[in-house]
Structures are given as structure tokens and as C-alpha cells.
Image 1 (cartoon, rainbow, N blue to C red):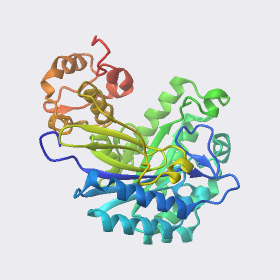
Image 2: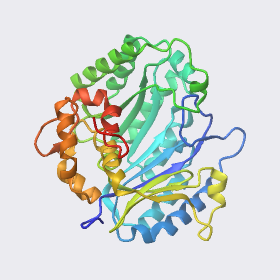
Image 3: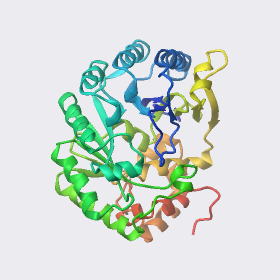
Image 4: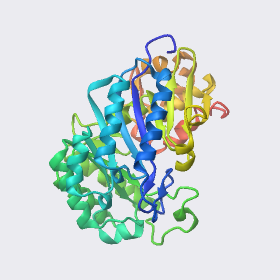
Amino acid sequence: MRGGAPPPLSLYVHLPWCVRKCPYCDFNSHALRQQALPEQRYLKALLEDLETALPEVWGRTVTSVFFGGGTPSLFSGHVLEQFMDTVRSLLPLAPGAEVTLEANPGTVERVRFADFRRAGINRLSLGIQSFHDHHLAALGRIHDGHEARQAVEGAMMHFDHVNLDLMYGLPGQTLEEARADVQEALSMGVSHLSCYQLTLEPNTPFAHSPPPALPAADRVADMEDSLSELLSTHGLEHYEVSAYARPGHRCTHNLNYWTFGDYLGIGAGAHGKLTFHDRIVRQMRHRHPEAYMAASRETGFIQESHEVLARDLPFEFMMNALRLCDGVDEGVFQERTGLALEGLHPLLLRLQERGWLSSAPGRLQPTKHGQQFLNDVLQQFLPEVPHA
């Protein structure tokens, strides 16, 4: 607990299967192909994993739950309800805790939204990416624009908190098309938008064979600025690098990540971060679904575990906190890392002089210029990098 109360605790649950893996995706996801979804086998592994991990989080309240993937909406509402019932029986769940499910339009029908709601899901995150059929086809998505619109309409009927994932910088995309996607999302009344630039991640099909007609870097920058202005004009606050929300609708779960909170990660390949009184530990479960389901309380579900060294904590903290447009209070650094901030003051002053960090007293906050060069800012906090 680093000398004080532990940080807030979230629960992340990874459901790793997709109907088809998208060519830009570098997440731990696995195409089902012709096999049946092993819901009950996987649920059994999740519950045993959770029970095995209880001593590490005993007595701590869970502030949020997030089902990520993969495509979690492939799972039935009944299985999700079974899981949530067990969570409530084993761990204190905060009153009104945010419970998010990621869903893809090609894997949901309206009746399933009602099932998800009954299971305890109160926030839905839809992977729309675009409303334009030709862009969806270029991205390898299994849904079209019509299915995307139907999914949003169904979600809005059952959930007060709905997020849409949208992408820009797509092959052949114009500024007008990128704005049209955002305007359509706004017209549907959603409370949260995540707008991501398409990036060619290593070891993905797009990295090996980039799609043609990718917009130039300056065109992508114009899209980013234009979309940010459009969203702000319509009352959505830009609160994180890629996240926009109406007041009162920021994602609690992600905010816990970005403020260096704790999270127990269960499921195939799930990552976790847990704070103890004398150390901070990062964990990763077995990545392959079969290896994960074959694990047990005796053999262990954790594939990797390591303590975060004190010299690495400034980088790890800033890597999260500086994604937030408003940054964090300086006191959060000491609370979450157990380190005094004084040792970083010369570096922080240099970053302020460069115009990368705000000079607002008592806050660790990137400037707009600093957010544009966030990787360069973060490199300054790496222990092996000489500070320029």
C-alpha cells in the first residue's frame, strides 16, 4: 500500500474470441472459425481464476468491471450473469459500479442487449469504426453501416451509457467522411466517443502489407484537429488522448488505468497491476485460450509476474497520467508510487520550459503541444535515457 491506502481496484475480464480477426488488430484475440464458443469451459476457468486471486485483493472494493476482447458480445447474457453473480458473492462491488461490455455490431441482435442489461451490464462500448460501407470493408469488419446504425439504436434503448469506437486516417478516407462519421454518432445522442487513428501495429497483416491510399500524416493531423473541434462544439469534453465524453459520462474504468489505479486482470492474456504495502506487481495470464482453460488452481493461471522497480515507476505513472488532458494532481504521484516528486523537479521544469508540460501549480498536466509529442515527453522519464 506504499505507506497508505491502496488505490482504487477495477476488474478486467478478457474474452478472447472473435468471428474474424481484423487485419489491424494486435490484441490477444482468436478467430472462432468453425468451432463452437466454449462458453461453459471458459466460464469455469474464469471463476476458478478469480477465486484463486482472492487473497491478493481480499476485502478491497471493486469500483468497475470491464469485459474486453476479442468480442465479448459473442458470449450469452446468461453466462455474463453467472459471472457477475459470482463476482458479487466474492468481492465487494461498489454501489452503482460501472460495468462495461465491448460489443461489435456484427455479433449482436436487439434481444441480446436486453439480456446483457439483465446480466448487470450498465455501459456498452460498440466497435463501430465507421458508418461507411467501403471503409468497413477495407478494415475487414464483419458488419456494414446499416448494422452499425441498428446496433447503436438498440444500445440506446437499453443503456444510459454508450460509447462508440470510431477510427480516422482510414484508407482513402477524406476529411469530410471522417467528420460525417462523427456527426452521425452525435446525431444518435451517444454520451461517449473514442476516436482512434488507424495505426499499423507490428506483427499484424496491415503492418506486413499496408493498405493502399492511407492519408498522409498532415491530412491525418487535420482530421484529428477537425474532429476534436467538432466534438467540443457539440458539448463533448476531450478528457483523454482519444476519449470524448459528455459531462458525467467519462469512463470510470479507464480513468482508473490512467490515474495509476489497480486492476485485477483475469482471462486469457489479461494484464493486471496490484499494489501491496511494499511493492507494485504486474501480472499476465496465460495468453492462449486453450492454455488458460487448461490451467488450474494447482498449476496457476499466471504466465508472467514481476515487480515494478522503483526506477521504472516515474515512467509507468506518466505513461498513464499524461494521457489525460487535465493531467493529475501532483499528490497522486506520491500516493500511487510511494515516491517523492522532488527528485523529478529538474526534469519537470525542463519539460515546462519546452512547452510540453503545463506550469499550473500542483498539477502534472501536458500542454496541447505536449500531447502532440507525447512519446517524446514520456521518453524523458525512462531511467536509461539521459535527460536532455
